[in-house]
Image 1 (spheres, rainbow, N blue to C red):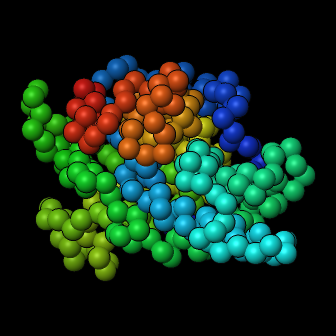
Image 2: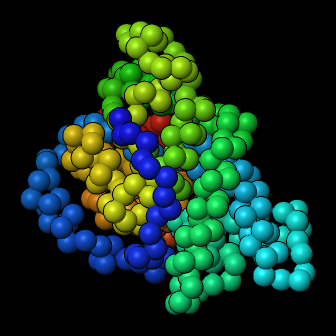
Image 3: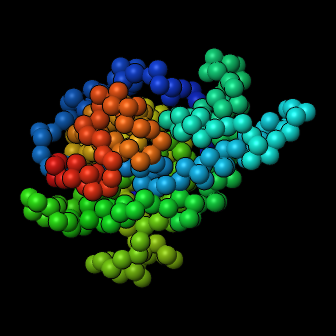
Length: 305
């Protein structure tokens, strides 16, 4: 499992706007994939996005965003706001979630990527946001959607009521466009303690849970380039000792599909309970399936096991 990375905000040197295309990504990753791709076989790893995919955390992010933006606004304007009155709609917030935190916040304060201050303002707001909202993570503010914890356990341990037989156990990974510290916080807060062949005394504190079974956990500040680039998926695959062709990526945003295609994953599966609706995700050719509930997600994944 990946160690917690040192606290820092992701660089905006490579803007992860929706205008980014798969063709603009690193040729090194593509050439490596073409040279090392294995023949089709059972999928051996599942990498998950976190917000809007595993965790129902949108209100935490929304309220933390308004808090940070309110402070920024009040320093620059005679007209003051409170987080409750700051003019950011939930629709605007959800749309912004497809970008990295610094880019999203810079856009929320009205800056265009071409603005000279876009990167510096975004990184400053991103640091403030990370410092504020990571400490607020718990099972109430960033709880798993119903059925997710059971799904993770079954996928990892090979349990399940499959029509075609018992599901094979797979490795688990997590990749978010939020900071890596947030990813660890959410998984630790949610993953249930359970009996296993590994004694709980082997783990420190309350970590005797599915959290320990995540082979790789990354965020935008711990990978070379964030989604929609495939760098993060590739880094997870490297740590899982798997080729991307052996991995499925699951997410709720257009950038998730694009990252999976860029990394040349076996498949990308979209979920419809996050920040983007079916109409939006259907436009992304990279998604092999769209799921409206956890049972549909289980069946979609199971087709590859």
